[in-house]
Image (tube, rainbow, N blue to C red; front, side, top):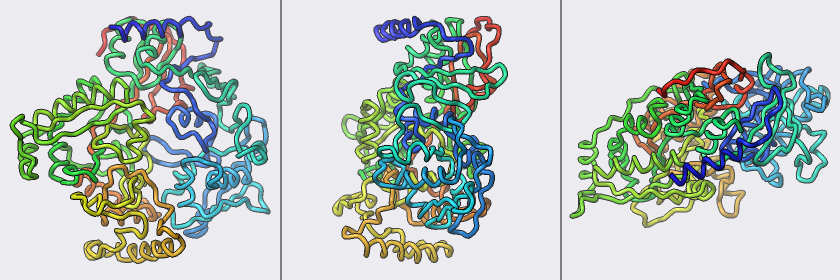
Length: 572
């Protein structure tokens, strides 16, 4: 009750803001904008708003299908050279044309270590150089380090104006950012309140959007009920939505989503290194009940990363709820109940978000029924993410917001991308004993080439790359390897299939490699998919939206329109 009262007062404060101008829609979001520069906008709120202001050479739809955006054409001249022609009618918000020089500047600045963006490493792994054609101002040449099946999805990066940034300190914007998308910034470009204005308003749609950051979900909902905001976009728990509906002054927009909620298991730690234990933990989860009780049923049970409709999706068997089988597997793994009935103890790390805490506690209750004593540890978001990224966890609950590109499997689960690369030689976990600092360990596993002939050439290539990097580095580090494989998972054949999928240009053959990898990953269970969460928004009674985007992107806000308020109705 105290939390509700506090939220109520906070929301009433938001509701007392001056009435917005006609054509303005106020959108309550969960966190402030840190940076709209597309090269630096890596957190969720910043990235979503940055996409309203900046356009990339390409764009990707909800199912991972790319299309041209600022680019008029993208041509692969050779496997290691791509040619991009920029649209002749593209303009920045200051009316200057978008040219190949802007493309070259954007990608080159991202790859420069001094610029200081977290995405630099991934771009340096892909591009050797991006150059403007000296004879044609609209043509850019992209020199690739290897054949790149992900090229079209890599080109979604928003293009920054070289004429404004090239001579500025560290290439940063001074004053409002200037992009080339249909929305331009008309106030501060970061912080708790950011406003954008539509250059070519959609008939009946808003001319101006004001994004207001309100951290507490109850306060966001109450700000809509009290008139301080028109929309609360995403991130509202079922309890909050039900309460808002009972008030009768708001309604819910809802659609199928692609954001994957999942568990990550640290395979470097015993007994989680044992596949039987991971299987048992998955079998002990009653996912339909969790979805109903913690999400109000708003979601679709997941079998992997990619939701139905994605071109690279492989339908996998759903893990049933089978606590008896789970107990049997734990017995097989030597984890028999002690006098107190406890077989093992685990810590589940989550953010302090109310829905995440509720989910983790419900999960702990279910595991307790098979003798797993799970302690839930909520952490402030930055601390939580820091621990996950550094591999300091046993189990975490996280959401993957936009699983578009199947190469995200490589990012998350490739051996070389492990967050912790130093070995622990005496560890009982084989995943912890791997030294991942230098030559790829998968390149030397002879069983891979025997089981998959196509992997023989892959191994020879990986060995040569690794030895070259070892020779050039005093510490034997590959340097280009990432760190997003937080679970510590390693499987040489999966590495091969993921790498082949990342370089195969034929989509059907590429999907086949990813299918092999998805089936093996599902069997090994380094992660446990729970569900794809519905995309939801709470709208004021006089607002409607045609469709909710599956990825939750803000572009759909252009389709908001004023309607006759609905009659109050009971929640579903």
